[in-house]
Length: 256
Ligand SMILES: [Zn+2]
Ligand SMILES: [Zn+2]
Image (cartoon, rainbow, N blue to C red; front, side, top):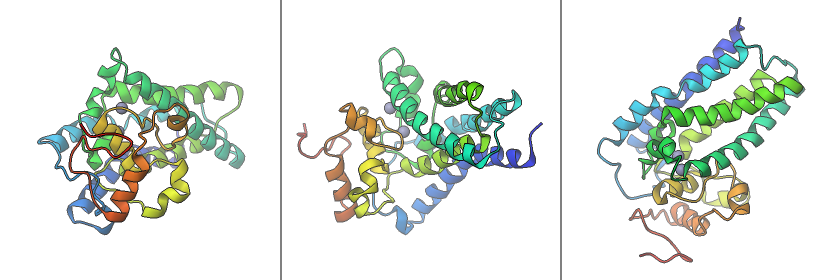
């Protein structure tokens, strides 16, 4: 039913979230060079890691739902061209779907789905895999749902979609942490368009704004980006001076 390569790819997707969380957690514990630019000079809450690890039991759902798509005969295109188009299509759609669904999940009526993920105000590497089951379902149904719909009209390549998931799991693993792995020069070019660990940390600590997944486009377009982000990023990466209070802000905001 599944080819050997497909099974290997599905196993990688099922285990990558935990593997990367463990990697970053122990790198941080050993004070590895990449983990030294702290974002918040605040310890994790008591029991946070245990709670996040318990929530992470849902993480293999990405692989299970992708296997379901294959089982029902979707994503069969094998051409190289379709690989790149499927990857790009998933990338663009995931940015739109994540931003839209994320903002909806911050509405009072839907927030129960998203509350668990937000219990982490200062992120640990395990925050990246700490979601409620319903949130993972919303995320995957949205992303794969549209790709399945597209597949009815233009056949989609499994490996293109899977490559996006692998990239997502890799990048998301260090987008949730209390250290910035990128350099001070990041914001000069790539960082103008792409998010960072600091970017997503501000969403967790302040609870609103910076809703984007991998890119800053929609936050900037719709006015939901924290305006002190770039200055904060420079301070954390150049002066290596972390934030000392969860509510700390830089101009144009005033600290209350
Ligand atoms: Zn949120
Ligand atoms: Zn998060």
